[in-house]
Length: 562
Image (tube, rainbow, N blue to C red; front, side, top):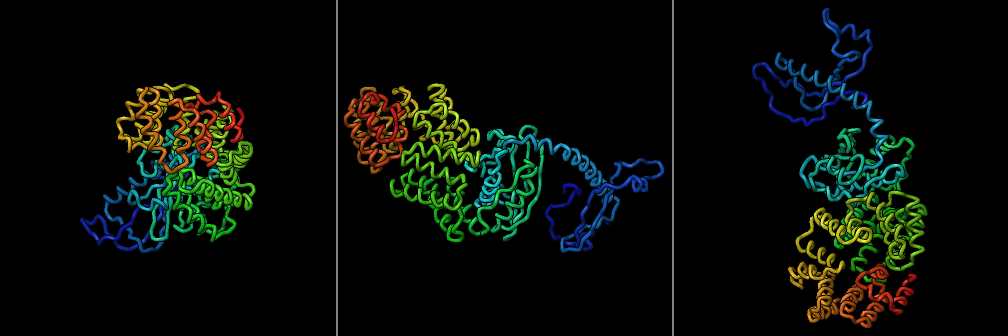
């Protein structure tokens, strides 16, 4: 216990009374605390024997006892006495180490500029209370993420470690941070104990640790307890951000919603919506819950789970409500910016929203990521590179960011380097064999190596390829003179119910030299506001159309310059 000494915190079990050779007798129920305290030189003199010097100056051992119902052992033999003496030596040596480490903590903490909060583990079963553990993790990330002085990895970057028994230091290296906040939880009914340690990635040194008690349904209070202890040590000038709600139940529902949204799978994000709605029912002026709904509706619409116009209209309504409640809410601006970018194609207003989000919270990784995509769409290449680099530095293991960063590598360093990056990306996220083949086939088709694209993609039956994979294969067929096979795939795509077909089919039309049909489909896609059109201006598959006056008209309809 900092500034106090050491406390026994192990598991205590009731067992039968034992008396073997006079060594150990359980004679009563009690708990003893052994504390190491400083004493004066005068007191120390009284501890010396005639021919001995004190083992440690200014140290004494104080044993305090409280009556409880936990078993306490009474040591009665010389063997047990020797054991106690050994324990005392360990404690005194440990105290010296603690004093040394404590003297170094300030320096280590002051050097901490980036942190990753790893998903909390359980002392019990590996997968026990996974949702609870990740909700607490997300709550800590949210609280720490409000610090402008410290870069905090977002939940989306650390989720991969939820069930992965990786070494703390190795995880920190992968996340490219100075320190890792690691911990475990122990639950008993509604009671909850969280044990945390902050570890330096560079030295492996434990630079801070503490234990916190709370309740499973009061994460808001637990979050505050931890923040009060940790934040001032990380940055003394920091002030704790005001909690967005005083209603713990509303906050619990919000955290459950964010936990599901961060999985970025349509089935999970759909489950998030009722939690956000319940949070709002409990606390009508809860801005984060409205922003959560905005993100859920927009991402689900992007995943084609909602009709385009309906889904984005609902998303925008929720984002605007969040900002009406809190005009200085960073996540509200990033949620609104995404809708303005992805659906409304209002590039200037999207840029303003992302810039404001970053101004309010420099660690808002989604704002950096989406701002980079917005810059790419309008042709601000250097700004695109800079924002994508920033997003990647803040969240190196967030899959959507890592995936979109492939485009940066290909544009800056060419196809060879891009393929090296792609192979690392595939390995990092443990793609299935079919996923690896499709990703590689797309790369080869986009880079003009059509023979390799065919070799890769033909290893998978056509019916198992997704629409994008089939399109890539059809382009490769068309470019290598296999017109019949390309047309067969094109006929299958025409039956696809999604507006996505109006963006993908033109790839094949262009490869076949049928520009008129390509433009006809592109016109339909723009009318339908298919969100894939944000890449139209720079899409290499459509490059042969750029010199055509009709292409310039398409750009004009999208509020894009030539």
